[in-house]
Length: 617
Image (cartoon, rainbow, N blue to C red; front, side, top):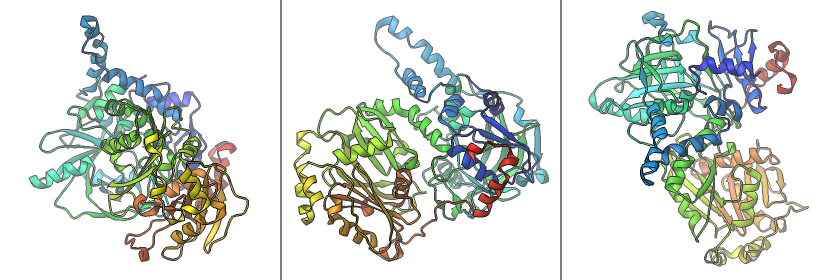
């Protein structure tokens, strides 16, 4: 089912009881975030805030806040159907005679939907603000988290064009409002927008930019998708294919750019590459940590066009699970056939919410020879944005990659530390606060597949002198029985600990000095309590050691695998505590995102006024 615009999708959700309206005044400064965060974490509905303080426009949030709503927004019954849809398109047949070729006709007809369709007039240009009328403060733009540098546009579809080739790009880059006519433009070094800006710099010209807010769900999703660099395949093409209709576009009022005709708002303007960059941030990011302030280009808004009755769509990001987890899962499903086309032994893959996309990738393979897990993992590191992956875990095809507990059980049982783990280096997401350098750091491959004879036997030679302890001996012999110990040791600075029955030992450490985590790992590896353990997970004092998701979320954010994942006897020790300047870590360590207590109390007190059920409080 194709949705012509955002409001048609909202109407369908409302008919299903999945959009609730709040008509009492609500602040865009933190209050909406607190409400929306509670709802998305409990699988609640989307919300239309009809009375946002300081704005005449309503705001909707949480439209794709569940797996089911995300699938519905993309016109499928289940996200797994996306993979089948793409596989059917790319599986063109060149043999089988006339009948085989005729079988491609419907597929080629589907491909025709890739081309956008130009229209002369559009709903998004019913109202036009120019000159002194332009005022971003009139839009209900959210300040999401207490330490944010200001309000941020969180669902912008940023449209640019390559100054040399004319190739179009639509990306989703957060935009901090600086004043009534200026925002930051969060173009990171790997992004296409940055490449377009650099070309404009070399040509000595401004880069025209249009920012769509709204549009139908297929385009909003497409702006987040990691598209491969295929000529003619851009975000409008992907949206057209997903919706089964050519995407309607209209020429901008003041910029020579095609913009979505069905959007709610369009911000038109430019970025001047000759202008000094502005300080942008902090921002409570999708990692669940604040991204610290940095310099980014300025976007100058020269016109705003809109519908007569626009709705402002927004999202929030932060500690998982959040709405973006379902968009990430949609990309997983959509690009699985393409990954299998290049690496055919892949049976499935998954990026769990605890890994906030790039930090953890679980891959299932049909294994046929020794070393195949490393072949697959290294192949993935070379595929587009998969280059940012930090930890790749490879499992057998019969393991359900979406079963988080089952995956880590396989790791404990089948991956011997040292023998079946491998560190390497490569590009990292620039939002990774723990990597050895900005955009560059260590990576870890864990082979949790069933081993072939050629893959067994080298563990003892890779082990240090501590192999004589119980856990080390178990690992060297290949025999390992996971179990939790009854008596656990203490260590200075430790605030909590927990062992699981499947081979994991979680320790929360209030780290105050250099080398403290490494000393803890060495001490615990030699203790009898390590006999049934293969992984020692050291986290900060703010982590719940009995919450597996919280532990892994902290670990994966806070490690550079080459520096922080070490072998201690038979243990693999993961140092997910904060890094200190005394340890050679020169960057500022960011705080975890938490809402201010006064806002939490306010929302608690007003919950009945919002008209929201108690089960989502």
